[in-house]
View (cartoon, rainbow, N blue to C red):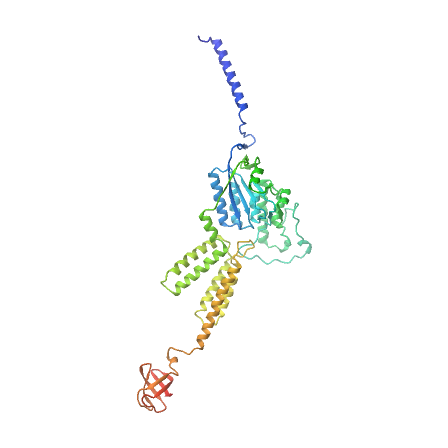
Length: 485
């Protein structure tokens, strides 16, 4: 039996009411949906995720920046929850540091920088990367700071002595400092800084203050780290609001950042890392190869190998192997020098020194050219990659070894040249003077003698008999002046 019109309307209204009540109950019983009014997006707290761990160890160079950029891109494509940069670095190249920071700022997932293990440091470029990360953490007994830029690839103008001893008082390690005007590093007066040094310091200050303001960290101390080369321990950094937390190890770090909120672009992400698993990301073969050839000592050795390979090929044309190996080694070395910050004055001195040592083979300078070349080679090697950043200069024992080997070769050349000059001449007309011959016939003025299996016209001032032994005293054209032995 069907409903009447009024009854049907009442039934429809009742059904809507029941559906509304059921829908409200389902909404109340279901987990709260993420809201976007305040820009927050909450991560699922009950599911497990994955955290990619990248390692920044040693001096930061082009290979390190490529490794971090690739690791961040792979972590995003793999759906990792966050990226952890485990850091222990004395600093590195500014260009590589800025590449890493640009990759961190553009990353769509949170990046945590963790200075570890205990005893590690985040000095110089590492401090900038720590400030750029969404979360900054340190292990106990670690330190950071000393972020003053240093001159690489050339010498700055000589510093003048400060006129006032009061101006050389070092800056305090904590507390605000004026942001106006260039403030030198510890122990250096403002008048002792060149214009270029002031530009570099002010640029670095503006850069790190921008990172500090972006992440809500202590911008005043960041400026001190640049202008005054200030440093902090992990506990002092936490107290000064330079870092966010101190963690004993990786599990402790994951537990402490769980539930923290970080801002990525225009959204806020709540981290859920308590049950996250860590995946160690190793560099690929290209990065490892780049890391090897851009090591200053390796690049220096490749350059020497290339030069000497080409020299051997020049002395022995057609051998091929020294020339091919030399060309390949020299091209790889030049590629490495293009990436590294090379002092081209040092490179020119090395080329000049090698050229002078080679010239010693062809000119009788008794070691003067070779000695000057050896000195130029040593000085050029010392300033080729002249930098205060540990790990970005050529190992001094390598330079000493190569210079010692070159010096021994030079001494050997001088000895052989001197010894050869003391020996009698064994070729040409000079070698004939004083040699013995035999009279071929009787003669008193002109005749013939046998010398070296040949008959020569001879002249003499004393009569000679056939078969008599004579001595050559002079050579004139094709005639020999002889006398009885």
